[in-house]
Amino acid sequence: MNRASNQIKRNFKYCCFLLILNLNVFAKPLAVIEINNDTKVDRNQVLITVPYLKIADKIGPEFPFKLVDKNTGKELPYQLETLGNSQPQNLLILLSCKANTKLLILINKGVPTAVKALTFGRYVPERLDDFAWENNKIAFRMYGSALETNVGNAFGIDVWAKRTPELVINKWYKNDDYHKDNGDGLDYYGVSKTMGAGDIATYVKDSIGYTNNYKTWKVLDNGPLRTTFELSYLPKNAGNLKYIVVKRISIDAGSQLNKVDVKFAFEGNSKLPIIIGIAKRNGADAILLNKEQNMMGYWEPNSIENGTIGVGCIFLSPAKSMDVKANQLISTFTVSSNQTFAYYTGASWSKAQEISNSMDWFNYLTKFNFQIQHPLLVTIL
Image 1: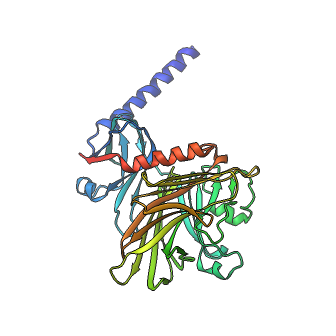
Image 2: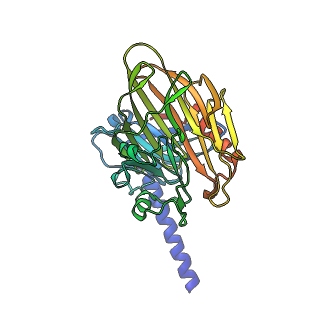
Image 3: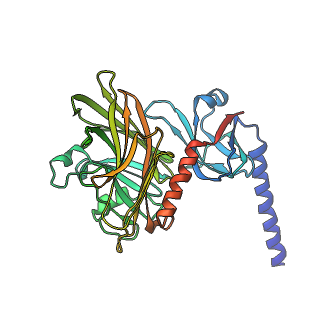
C-alpha cells in the first residue's frame, strides 16, 4: 500500500512539473530572445548584454517580467543595467549555451524570482577611502586620496584572494583581520607603488606617470549580476601635457576579469603614451607576453603558506610593445583625448581550487579572449 501511495505521489509531482513547463513554454510570450553560439566552445554561466531598447517596444508597459528557457522551462536570472541612468540601458542575462546550439528565451509576464547578489562594490570610508569590489570568484580594491599621506601609500589595483562564492568585503572590513586566512581567503597581494594587477598610467620618455589615488567615486550599478563604478582622479602632468583621467570598472558574476574603460582628457590633438602593467615578483614565476593575441599574463612565485596568485590582461587594441621592465610586466599604447580605451584585467588564486597552475591560468585567459572575439549572437524575435 505504501509503495503504491508513493508512486501516486511521484506521478502527481511529475504531472505538476509538466503542467508548469507547458504553461511556461506555450503561454504567449511578450518577446523571444534567440541566443546563438556558433562556435565549438561551450559557454558556461556567462553574462550576455541585450540593449534594452531592442525589447522595450515589444514588452511595452509590462513590468515586471520573467525570462524562461523554452527548452527546459527553467527561469533565468537577469539584471536591468542602468549605467547610472534613470531608465534601463541593458538587459543582462546569466546563462549557459553549449557549442553550436541556439537558445530561445521567452520574456513572459510575471514577477521574477529574486536573484542572489553575485557582485558587489562600495566606497570604504572606514579604511582610508578604499574602493573595494568583488564577485563570486575574486575581489579587488583601489586606493583613495586619504591614503596618499599614509606611510603605506600604494597606487595600483589590489587583489583579495577568495575561495568562497560568498561576498566577503563587508565581513572582512568589519572584522579587520583580512591579512589572515580565516577559511575564505585573505589579502596578501603586494601593490606598493606599482600598477599591481593591471592598472593604467601615462608613459612619457620611458617614465611611468602613476595616476596616484582616486579622488571621487560613483556607483553606476551594484549587482546582482554586474557591478559598475567610476573613479575620477585629480589633474596631473605627463611631460608638458596636463590631463584628467576617469576609470570605469565593471565586474560580472563568474568572471575572473574586470572590464576597464578609461578616458584621458587633455588639450590638443597629440597622442598620449600610456602603459598597463602587472607587478612582478622575485622567484620562480611564469610570464605570458602574447602581442599577437593582445594578452599579458603572470603566474606569481608560489607561497608555501598562501598559494599562488595569477594576474592577467586582455587588450582590445593592439599594443605597441610588451616587455618586462623595472619589476613590472608592461604593455604600451597611445590614446587621443577623450578616447575610450578598453581592456580587461583580473586575477585568480590557486587555493580557490579552480585554477591551480600557470597553464590553467593562461588557458583561462586564452578562452576568455576567444569569447570576446566571438560573442554569442543575440536576435530579438
